[in-house]
Length: 392
Image 1: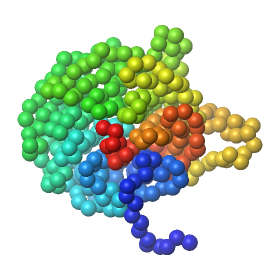
Image 2: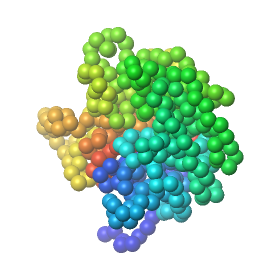
Image 3: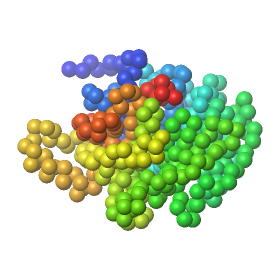
Image 4: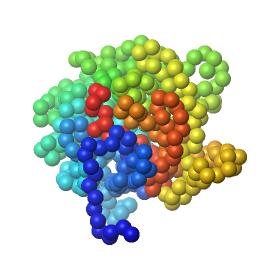
């Protein structure tokens, strides 16, 4: 029997095989151990989607949150809450303007500068701006207007970028106090009227990879004084397009830094189905810019009120196949993917309509098992920074 009132602390160093899974219904993120299947902790982020920012140099994580004095109504208060990364207890909070964007996007609503000094929170009212928080001083610093440009991507210790409606990037440089030092728009690096990029970019070292609706990769190098746009390249060959393959999913990209492998969810469908679940995960070598593997995906599984409905390996295999078919027909497909950053990386897949997670060997593509962290949905999958730092 569990001891009532007992509080545990995570052991350091943390396992590399951990993932935070965000539940849009329960408005929380749950920390899951991908090997044992245990749920190690939960953070409630208040109203809207909960996602965290992970410090690289401090044992902390930061959660932009919105709270209403009457639950779903009343006076609104937006904060960035500081949590201890091992006890998961709140240790501080910084009040920010009550304008942070609340949307179903899995990434880029907030970011950390590369030195962990400043937290950046995207606002939309519908005017767009970014709130800057000094995480060392625990203080709100400034709100920086980003007219016509949305979301926030870190690009150094004192800089961030935001994609703009005309295909350009807005580059904002901060001074040492976190206030705006300069703001410059680049040339357009994609054609929004012809083939827009999704906002679900992934980063490897100093390069952001944006992928368009039609599967073209637009690399953006942010290591220099100005962003550099490399020649775009295609995830899909002519024969793939002829067969109707295209990107799909809510969080459709993941990258393993050490091996330079890019993982992309794909499915077969007509135009404008770029948010449909993926039936396969295609693997690319970033150095060679070519596909090196295809992984056939299984449903992450079904949950009811957070509890898994999974017959497991004991079920006679024809019935097991029938169970998989039922999951597929029910639309419990893969909408999100993440990858751990160790030498034996694991792939994690999730579904917007289920709280269960599918776990794969990221190098062989072998399906291993399912994990249910107690969520009802899976909107965002995040690997803690502690497991990534060694590969940067």
